Image 1 (cartoon, rainbow over the protein chains, first blue to last red):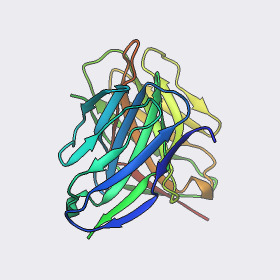
Image 2: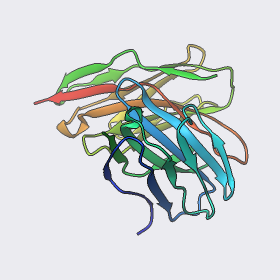
Image 3: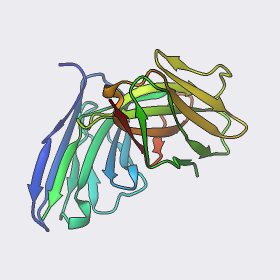
Image 4: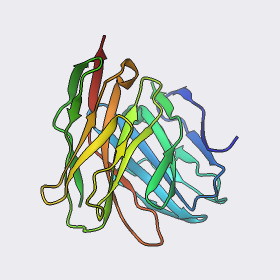
Length: 110
Length: 117
């Protein structure tokens, strides 16, 4: 199916565990983004990537790691999850002047 | 740095009536885009409308229209003939225009709109 997909849609984990959220897009967009959504904050940028093997930090990068070995995939890893990382995570990919969003991944860290 | 402010955390409107959501932004850029996104309970981010700053004409999409005041840095969304399906969180967002690249979206904190029957 064409579009942008995230997995898992829901994840519960424990403090200190490693978690990876996956993002896959079929449009071959160069740019991809990870946002987190928290009550009272809207969406905030964690990391973005301009192309394969090119990534850069956003507004709230601490505690997260990204990689982009292939244009279509942009995984987000929490190396040691903390309760403050409980959030809804959105992946997006871009065409000039517009971003397309995945359906979001709800992560709960106990 | 750019900022986006939505001063109305919650609003409600009767079905079939008109409602306006406010958004102001701060930037020193001259070329940029402004967006309104809708997020229903399904959590999906849905693009409602987009405005390019260099265009003086206000964007419209069916029942949705904007009032773009560049000098005042204001970008309000008007929803006409409100429908129950318009119930959602609405986010105003800013994107710097960059030739040959893709900008990041900077979001406001959102306005929760409830349409009442």
